[in-house]
Image (tube, rainbow, N blue to C red; front, side, top):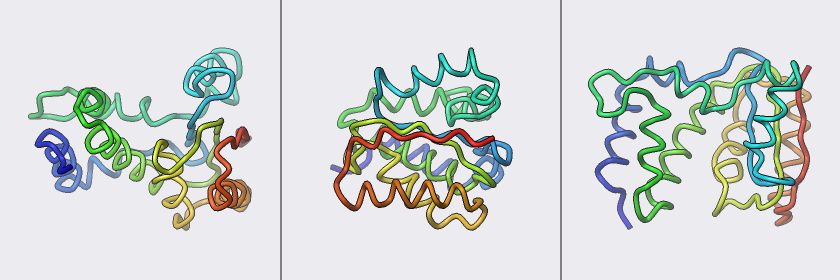
Length: 173
């Protein structure tokens, strides 16, 4: 199914605004990517960890970055609100999933230094942005440290072997 107009509008906005794309980034050594479930959805696990762990609290996830990026002249006031608005479109896979893949791919391509991860179960290319986009983009990113590359190698082997219950995280110090 083709992309709906609202999804195309976000993709055009991103394409036409390189300055905005460059802001879809965490500081060096502060990118935190997550996917799947462990005991509960990984984003919920991270919310709790951020309240109790200074190491995790110092990392930034994509929604924290997107909420700070204003979108002048657009219906939504910031990139997070815009992405969330696309989540309600049907079919989601052809719209919301594509929007999150675009934003996540930019976030991963802008990562520098050590990248931290919280990756649980249910990680497949058809269901999770991490497997579909972030992992391949990170593997091409020349600005990552050797520890991150080692962790990425593990995730890559899991995906190549069809292992969807990854359940492995790393918080860089």
